[in-house]
Length: 206
Image (cartoon, rainbow, N blue to C red; front, top):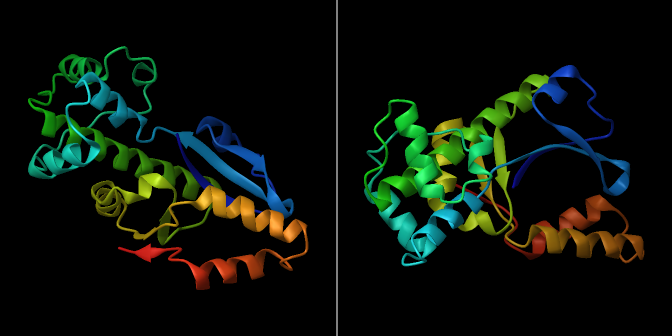
């Protein structure tokens, strides 16, 4: 799952937040993460499994790049894709049921998945902006998934927003810095952010 979130000092308790399946998660420094869990790269992992891991994830990216002409997408957050026994068959069935030509090869399946993920993130950001009544100019993609340059670029294409990539080990770094603050090794969150920015490649614009 990929959380799309917005950090705030208070909770968002609006009908739209419930309708769009957002939640308020208590976090560090008495702040709340307003977030929505949506589909992530698990779906391409299932595709790789269906192909008996004959293709590495880099192979799938390379094949997807060769098939960017394929533009059809599907709703990756449809419950059918959370419980699919065979992801490729489920994707093909979805297209047939909706009178859309399904992917015809591995590359088309891969680009279809990546493009569909990017579209779902675009929709989540629109929902976030509607609920918070704010407009966002950039997206920070964190964690291991941010190493997928194709997906990063597709997100940029879909959203027309600036993309900042990294850090890759965001969760681990956040946990370490939080513990350092609790032990008074660091004064506060602002000092932690300064150290993070100055010591590692914490965010690269694409």
